[in-house]
Amino acid sequence: MITTYQRILDIRAKRGAGYFVLIDPDKANVNTLPRFVETATEAGVDGFLVGGSLLVRDQFEAVVRSVKGSTPLPVVIFPGSLMQISSAADALLFIVLVSGRNPEYLIGSHVAAAPIIRSIGLEAIGTAYMLVEGGGTTSVEFVSNTRPLPRQKPDIAVAHALAAEYIGMKLLYFDSGSGAELPVDDAIIRSVAHYSPLPIIVGGGIRTPEEAHRKSLAGASFIVTGNVLEENGGSSLLREFADAVHQPQTAPRH
Ligand code: 1GP
Image (tube, rainbow, N blue to C red; front, side, top):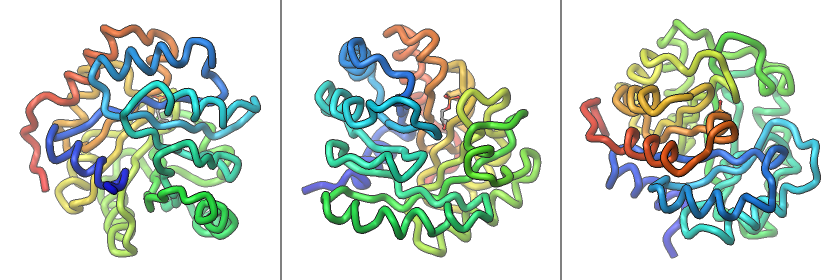
């Protein structure tokens, strides 16, 4: 059976770059969610991430099941904590917060979560998560008690990405945090894409299809949006984002 990681690689190979929609389990409305997921699927998105840095409502499992039941596309958990594990998803991003120096998020939670992930047979995809300064204190920064990478220093981002690659991680996720004022700088994406063949996921504060297009041109393999769709998630905006990300690429690709 084809793994979800392979499906992710195939999306990048076929479309140049892919577009993921992030569903925050705290904000999702389980009554309207199936319709939204169907609309997004028809609009040409490439998959769904489910997760958030806080869980204040007890509906994580219901949200994952609802998304999974409404689309044939990959449904991947983007966990903010140990409580976000579900066998209903196709896979889980096994996030290592490599931009920080908090051992809990580098190995502690992972040791606690690994046996559970194994016992439910969930695919875990080793993902280096790098929080980047986005113009304010984000939930991830506060909850994880870590500092983000500096926004204007691509060399530092490249060093983290290469370290993650050499350790054996499979995906790089650069995030300026949900609702960030400023998305990850294009110079960071360009530099990392130049040095590392790993797929680069970019999210946080991306509000327009033009911005998403610029990020994919810079070398992002996947663009993630969450907030903008919670505010205005109609099918035309979803389609515009998907088309913008899928437009022909000119950046160097591996
Ligand atoms: C946050 O990358 C995601 O972790 C998406 O951010 O909600 O700002 O689109 P937004």
